[in-house]
Image (tube, rainbow, N blue to C red; front, side, top):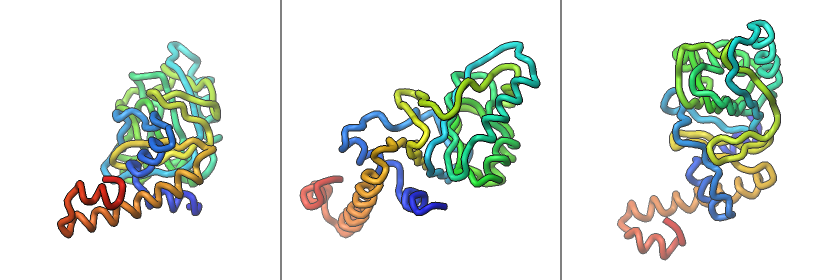
Amino acid sequence: MTDLARRFSALYTAAVADVLDGLGFLRQTLPPELVPLMPGMRLAGPAFTVEGRPLENDDYDSSIRRFLSTLGEVPPGTVAVYATGDRESAQFGELSAASLQGRGCAGVVLDGGCRDVDFIVATGFPVFARYTTPRDSVLRWNVTASGEDVTIGDVTVGTGDYVLGDADGIVVVPAARIDEVLERAEAVAGTENEIRAAVGRGLTPLEAYERYGKF
């Protein structure tokens, strides 16, 4: 794990989202329907984007070759971010997870479907997905691009943007602002720790706001 990943992993999405709001980036959280396969899953890493679309009656061999070729492009340490354009089949499963985990990838954000959930959960590999289904995507869905900007909900995600996911959801930090957002979010987290301790000692919420400038 890189130093950047360690520092982001020590944060939480709400602190990062608050910093982004303060900088004018008001649409950086992915749709709340994208949830971890099990409670407690967290992910942090630069995005590697994949886009696809539904397709019927494709040749099985060419379809799976396109998918596997793209899967093999995901760099170690990154979060694979899939914009599938699909709501019916599973574009990700156990063997895909094993491949990415074995190469040291940081996790998957899947605006689409996942299957083999029990197997993936048993490995601890972090996957956030919109839905689960046993229906395979081969013959039903194809990769159309990788490494290019994708849109999920009202968020544009580019390869190199930083992705942080936890129990609250997923936030995306623009690549050009990663260092600034990280430093500010660490400061926010420190201040919130102080507020938490202060209100625990009896300081009222308004007094806390007046003292610390946030609540």
